Image 1: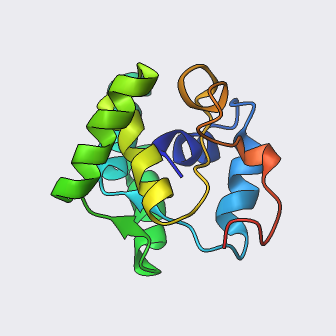
Image 2: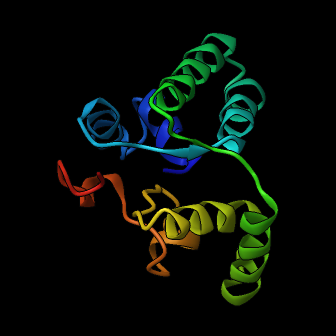
Length: 134
């Protein structure tokens, strides 16, 4: 999953909140990039101005990681991300999540409709079912 799912799980006003919480609380094996630590903290601190939310989000990312679900950047992942970014016209950040999902033969879950979901690169949290992800 990308950082947007983690952020939606914290933001009760986000339309994906309930489904993001369900996904995080379910039994599926989940993974995210180490980049998610920075992305969620940045939004919580800079946009929301909520240091408590930053702490809670850091704990959520760490919980995903405690199950072996933190994907670290490696040269091959970055190479694939650059290729995907160029092909799709998206940021290398978003493309890195796509590359990681492809490398693990998994599904990327994101709340980013404009750059990922609408292009068929990710599923919304509501479009996942228990057991589908791992």
